[in-house]
Length: 154
Image 1 (cartoon, rainbow, N blue to C red):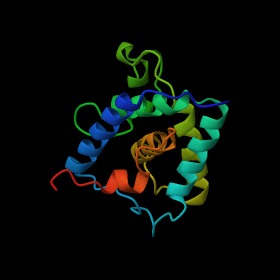
Image 2 (cartoon, rainbow, N blue to C red):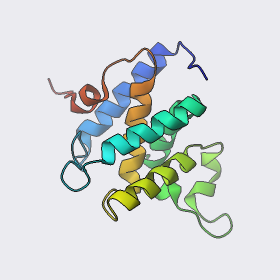
Image 3 (cartoon, rainbow, N blue to C red):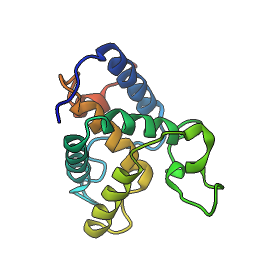
C-alpha cells in the first residue's frame, strides 16, 4: 500500500514535541543505547515497524499516538500495554479508545526477547517504534538519528 502525502506541519509538530520530550527525559534513551546489551534492538524495531507500515501505512501515526498515551504524565512506563482481567487495565481506559499499535509492540517484544531476553523494555520499544514511525513518513523530515540527537538548548 502507498503512503499518503501531506500532513507536513502536523508531523513537524509531533516531531518537535518528541524531541522536546526526549531532551528533558531522565531515561536517557538515545541512538545506540542498547548497542552493547542488545546490538540488534534498534534494527529489529525499525524492521518490524517497516513491515507493519508496508502492510498498513496508517500504523505509523497510530504508533506515535501510542507513545503519547504511554508517556502522558510522568514518563514512559509501558503501562498502556498491560492487559488485565475485565476492564481494569489501563489499555481499557475510555481515554484510550481506538488506540492501535499494541500488536506491533507485542511482536517486537517477542522478537527482542528471543534475541536479548529481559533487556529491552516495552516502554523503550514504544518510544523507538514511534521514532521510527516518524522517520518513515515520506518525505523524511530528518533522519531518526538526527531527531533523537537534536538538542533544543542550542
